[in-house]
Structures are given as C-alpha cells and as structure tokens.
Length: 119
Image 1 (cartoon, one colour):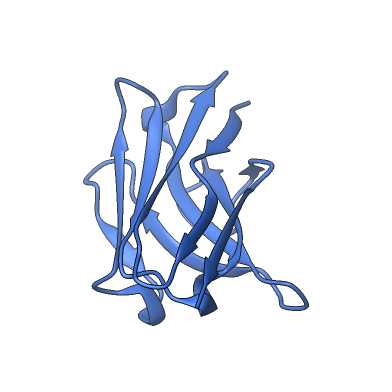
Image 2 (cartoon, helix red, strand yellow):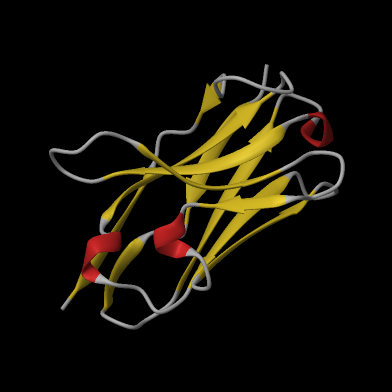
C-alpha cells in the first residue's frame, strides 16, 4: 500500500507559478497511475491532471490545459504539478492520488496541500 505526501502549496498572486510535489512511499511507485485533484470551498473534488504509469501519457482538465504540467520521477518516487499563470479560481486544496488498477477510481490519497491565488 502506497502512502502519499504533498508539498509545495502556498499563497501567490494572480499570474504567479507554483510547483507541487507528491512523495510516495510503501509501494512500487512505477506500477501506479498518478493523479492530481483539487477541491475548492463548497465545491466537489475535481480531476486536474494525471500521468500514466507505463508510457507517461498525460491528461488534463480543460481549465488548466496550457498552464499546468504533470510529470513523474519513478526513481525518486515523486509526481509533480507545475502550475503557471495561476488564477484566483485555481484556489483549492490539491490532492495527489495513486491508482493501482488500470481503470476506475484512485485508491490512495494524500492529505492535500492548500493553494491560494489572490487577485
């Protein structure tokens, strides 16, 4: 079973950048699909980005395409979310997640890291 710990959140200005990191332990990292999700106050959690285990194929929600980049380092057992051109509507708690199955829901979650973008 994998454990996930996010870091890198903070408070930034509109248009700034942040890089989130997620460190994994307790599992074979390269065998997991990895994803980033976020939840804003009063809203449901939403998918942000993912990166596949075998070929590194990435996927993004439309609202972050061209601004966010997800990447992974299997040797370091980390996944990253580079966030550029941040907007106030990106304010949320960001969660890292791992999926061992090849489809369906993510099984393992981190505790989240807060990202606040002020206008």
